[in-house]
Image (cartoon, rainbow, N blue to C red; front, side):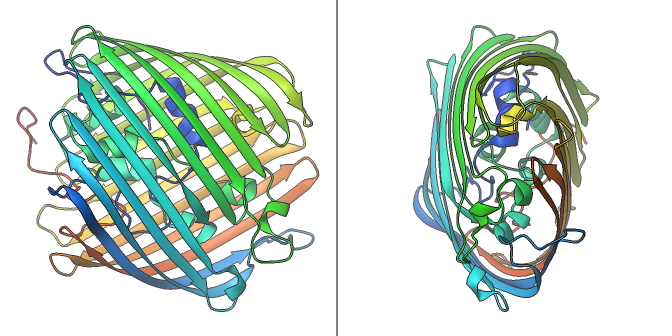
Length: 483
C-alpha cells in the first residue's frame, strides 16, 4: 500500500508510481475494493501468457452469514439482521495484452449474492477494471487505471485487500521490497495490487456506507528517471463513493453516515536512492474532498525513509503535516494543521510472506469534519512450493476520532484455506468477521458480522488461492536472491 522509492543502483523502475502521500490517502478513501465482489476474481494485470479476450475464472459459492446490532437501542433499518444462508456465483472475463514496454488489461466481473431468509437483499454486483502502462524513451513511465462498479456488503466481506494481493504475488523478497518501497514492479500482479487506483478498504464500511455502494476511481501517473538514483513523479487521483438504496423501504442510503463522497488530488514526489538498500523520498499533495457534511481542501507534505534489511526483510517510515481548509461544513470542522505519519514492515521467505502497515491521516479525508483517523493492517500468506494447500490471513483496523460526537471504531479479520483439486479447479473455505462501533453526530450503531463461505473455483490457469493472483506465491529464487 505504499509507494516509497528504494531502487538498486543497477535497477530502474519498470512502472511509474504515484506519490506516497496520494497513495496513502487513496488507499484509505479510494472508490472500490481491489478485488471486486467475490473470491475468485483475478486482478487487472493477471498474466495468463495469452493475448486477446479470455474467460479468466468462474466460481460458485455457498455459506452462512450472521449480522447483528448488539447494544443498539433500536434496530436501525438498512441491514439484513439475523442469521441467513448465502449462495451465489461469479465469473471474470476480459482482454489483455502484455509487451516488454507496455501493457493493457481490461476485466469485467459480474457476481450474484443471494440470501435464503432475506431474499429482498439479493444483489447482482458488477465490477469493471482497466489498467494501461507505457515506457517512453527509456526514462519516462506512464500508467493509467480506472475502475468502478456496484458492491454489496456480502461481497466486501470476502474481497482480498491490497496487502493480501501484494504478499501473494509472485517474485522474490527483493521484488516485493522494491514494489512496496519503490514502485518498481517485477510483474503486473504487483503493479495491479500496488500501482493502480487503490480501493476502498476501510473496515468501517458498514458504518460509513452501509449495505450497498456505488464506487468509481481513476488514477494516472508519470515518472521521469533522470538517473538510476533520482526520479520525479506526478500523479493524479479521482474517486466517488455513494451509498445506494436497497430494496427495503428504508434503504441503506438512509442510514449511511457518508451518503456520498467525491475526492480529487494531485501529487508530486521526489526520490533519491542513498544506497542500494536505502532511499529518501519527499512528497507533496493537494486534494479536495466533498461530502454531505463538509467540503474542504487538504494540503499534505511528507518525508519517508525506506530500507531493505538483509535478504528477506524491508521496512519504511515517515511523517509530515497536513493543513485543512474548509469551504463548507455542517459538522464540527475548522482550519487546522495536524501531524501525519506512516510505517510499514514486511518479509518474504521461501514459503511465506507477510506485510503490516499503519497510518495516521486527517479525518477530513472521509468528509467527517475535524479529527484524525488511525489505520493499520496486515496480511500473511503461506504456500510451500509443490503443495496443493494454501493458507492466508488478513487484519484491518481503523479508528476515527473527532469531537465527543465523532468516535468510530472498526476492524475486520479474515482467514482462507485453499485446496488445489486439479490443474484448473480448486476448493476454498473462507471466514470473515467485521465489527463496527461508535457514534457520529446524532447517530450510534454497533454492527457485528460473521460470515463463512465455501467456494468451488475454475480458473483458466493453474488455480491458487483466489485471494492471490494467477501464478502467485513464492517462486524459485531469482538471480541474486539466495534463499
